[in-house]
Image: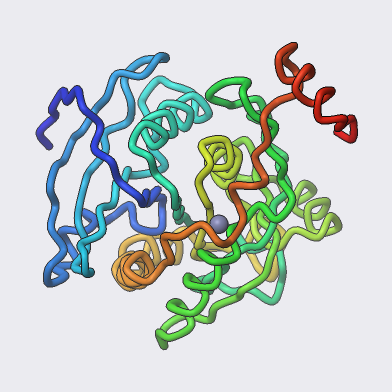
Length: 294
Ligand SMILES: [Zn+2]
């Protein structure tokens, strides 16, 4: 892959954060989708914390064409903590003016109703990771009520539901662990009691960072294994088969969804980001408005 050192970050409305669900593909090239065009690849930007993950810019054959910035495997960087890599990625997405963020990944099933190859478009999360303080700055109070954009969620569920290969679940709670290892059986038992349906390592901090940059966020996740102690012990071969064979249809439906998502902001996600009150000038402003409620 060529690596360029661009100075100017393009203005792009949509970001696709690739994960293990499509990792085995070159996305979008391997789909050979008519009209989808890769414009630049290997884009690495200088952020305040070091080089960004390598991004790819491609366009979708919509009218007018939609630009998408994408990264592989959540923007992981060798030797850099996962939270730090996410922070650099979202710094670039903020500079690019990204308004809609769609993430994907592979997850384990905690809910015994789920099987490998099921698709879950979760509606909430529990953050059991230790990465809660990952942020770009201290300017905003991010309210995590309704964390998943209802508009992006609707499009993902509708497009996924139109394909015949996978069962699609439109509700669920994603439990985020620190990784990099999987979970123990006792942990999964606790997570099930908490009401979690699936387990993975990435929805947080991505959902926090998206809210911080004022973007909508939704994720679509492919069940790749039973979590420990759920239904039956999972097999590495099944995981591997899904990793390679499940990627293409999963990527196709995500691309289709990106062509159909609404780019307006009538969903109201942006209003769940408020100016922080932890600054003298903002306290003065709130007092002048007679607003002491928060
Ligand atoms: Zn939204």
